[in-house]
Image (cartoon, rainbow, N blue to C red; front, top):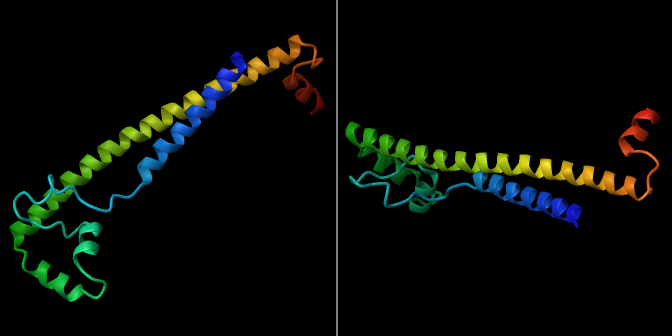
Length: 139
């Protein structure tokens, strides 16, 4: 019973770690309107905004719109972009830490499950010696 608990716990932790790691690499196709553009700047450095706003052959319009920016507009857009990217990186770094912790927990539970299996097999006389000892002697 305990062996199954460790085995299933290890598998569950590994699956959750994988999901957390995948969440980190999922791209962010749009910008949060509530955080961006409070002063009227447009997020021209964000690929999601550019793709949604301009057609594939719309570079001339994109270039025209960007040419309308003055130095303050560029500075504001860069500052807002930095703010948004910083928040995204902060959240994603938390998911990296969660994925790492779950991976370590899964490895520990898998190790305990293997030790429990070894002890169970040895107590049932299924094995004459520990698999680790048998492997070491055969090498």
